[in-house]
Amino acid sequence: MIGLSMTAYSGRDLSGLEGWVRRTRKLGFDFIEILSEWPHYLTRDNYRLFAEVLDGWGMKRTVHAPFSDVNIGSFNDRLRRASLEVIREAIELAAELDALSVTIHPGHCSPISVKNRRKYLEIHRESLRKISEWGLEYGIKIGVENMPRFVILDAQTCERLWEILGDVEIGVTFDVGHLNTTTGKFERFLEVLGDRIVHVHLHDNRGERDEHLALGDGTVPWVRVLPRLPRVTWALEVNDIESARRSLEFLKSLH
Image (cartoon, rainbow, N blue to C red; front, top):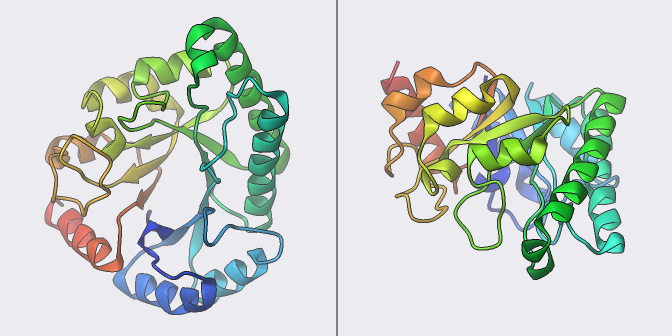
C-alpha cells in the first residue's frame, strides 16, 4: 500500500486539501499521511475535516505526530510532559480517524543529555513506554523513526535506535532517506530492526543532508533496497505533487 505524505502539500491552510487529495487519488495513491506540523496541525477542531475529505475520496490514512519543539527525552519534566501530551493527542485523533499507524520522533540531545547518557536513556525509555501503552489503549500501531544526519538528533543508526527502544514494546518507522544520510547500511537496519518495522518512509537525497527528493534523484540504491523492504504501508515523503508523480513512475519502472 503506497501513500503520500503531506510534506507534498503546499497550502498554508486546509482550504486546498480536497483538491490536493483528489489529485493524489487520481495518481494512484492508497492513503495520505497526515503530517501534524505547522501550519496545519491535526487538532480536535479539524480532524473531522480530514475524515470527511479522505473518506470522500476513499483514502486511508496514517499520521505523523508533531515533532518540532517536541522532545520526549527532555530532562525538564514540564517540557517532557507537554511533549508527551502533544503525542498522546495525536494518537487519540489518529484513533478517531481510524488511522493505520502513527509515526513519532525519538527524543533529541541537549548539553545535559550528552553529559548524562544513562539518565537520558532512562528518561527516553520511560516516555516510550507511556507512548506504547497509549498505542495499545487506542489500538494504533506506533513507529519510532530513525533520524537523519543532524547535530542534535538521536537514533541515526539502527544500533542506536535498538538501544533506545530496549525492551519497550513499540514499533519502528524505517525512513530510507534518513539512513542514506548516516550509515547507508540498509541491509543491516533490516537485519536488526526488520521485525519491528510497522511503516516505511520513502524519499531520496545525495547522502549529505535530508533533502526529500523524488525517488531516483539522489543516491539511495533503490534497486537493492526496495525488494528487501517489509510489505507494510509505504509513504512517499517528497516535497511536491510532481515529485510524487515521478516517484510513482520510478517505482513502477522497477517492477
